[in-house]
Amino acid sequence: MTNKLKYFIGNWKMFGDFKDFKIVNKINQFSYSPRYRSKKKKIILCVPNVLLDNFNKKIGYNHISLGAQNCHHYHGSGPFTGSVNASMLKSSGAEYIILGHSENRSEGESYSIIKKKIISSLDKKFIVIFCIGESLADKRAKKTYSVLREQINGSLDKKFDVNKIIIAYEPVWSIGTNKIPKTHELIKTVKFIKKEYKKIFKTKIDPKVLYGGSVNNKNIGLFSQIDELDGFLIGSASQSSKKFIDIVKNYYK
Ligand code: PGA
Image (cartoon, rainbow, N blue to C red):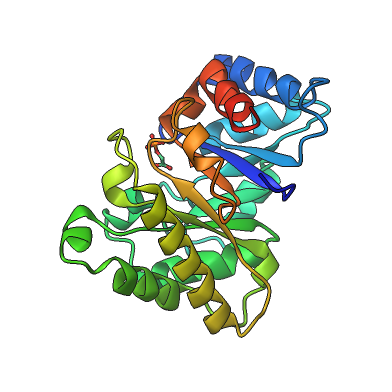
């Protein structure tokens, strides 16, 4: 295992209430516990918008960061009932933002809409967690690489600041299914994503690429052996402080 910075990002999805601050609090304390404070890690919890401001104020001295899970593509105010823009989320305490999650793509989010969301979020000084991943049908049709290439090309632009974008590779078939890619396939895919990204940005700097989809405290041991991965996007297991903390602990075992 290398000594590179590793990301552990929780995606609460549509989960949580004000009382669930205790989960955030426990993870925050764990992050700074004597045994783990020296680990080169970054913990981020992406919670529902309505909890951001409250959690941000309560957390006090924070060793972790908060993130949002989506935003409207329009940067200003406007007639978009029920929506929030990147600026509103920033002022609620979010520093990171998940964009392009397959659960939003499946609701009709297009490449160009995601691109506008990225532009708007970067403009507000967010670090963007940009999700890509193939469906089961894509995988069966052996289209994984072409789909990933299309998703990257469709929403990223070489004008973007490469240091402000983290890619989360989340095969759609692995989200919430307890199915994970085979290690050798995952390594190949992550290498492909890094190569493709460097081509677009014409950079020699390796982008950060996370894996997401059914990560738990048991399979994290397998993932910890993959040096190419810069961390994890963790869904349901991040809704429990114990499960989330066990993932981090087992990663460093
Ligand atoms: P999961 O979700 O860990 O519950 O599979 C991951 C995600 O959707 O980000």
